[in-house]
Length: 250
Image (cartoon, rainbow, N blue to C red):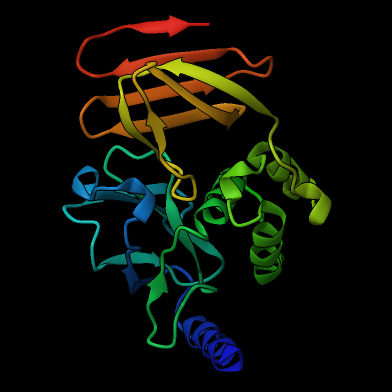
């Protein structure tokens, strides 16, 4: 099966190279299923797909549903990362052309490849050439080093390693973590990270969890959104988006 997929990708590249380099390619992108950890699909009414055109400029396309597939016009040549953000989401699913093309000629957008697609999208913004990268090896290393949760990795560190042209397994390292306790209403709070289990908040009114340094978003069907920013020294800044403005700093 792996050999068949590799052969298809090879033929796809050869076929694409027969066209003009500036000619866009229309391709169907299969959208990912919503993660079980999100508890409800009501948060995902619509999605935003982000990619770069043949000139390298970012393109955003809005779609009314996160189900099924969408059609995009993307560059015919080279490595092209595609990102899909559910409505209101900060963590994307993604895929990388042509490496995530299936046997039917469709591009698979998955949660597993979202981190890598965003890494490559950011790398392309810096003007770096991605075609020399071993994308399949990058997929494997990200999966192995992250333990199945790539959003625990330090993307800025990996980006610097790739930018300097010396990427290897040592370019993948986890972000520092801190134990946090955040005031929140009782109920289940779900992270935008699809690989993170929901956190149950009891009558004590504290969301207790371990978070890496950086930006996080938690949601509750009853109580709205918590945007959480964890600093290098473990300080937590929270903006509670429930309709009444306010923020708290610890």
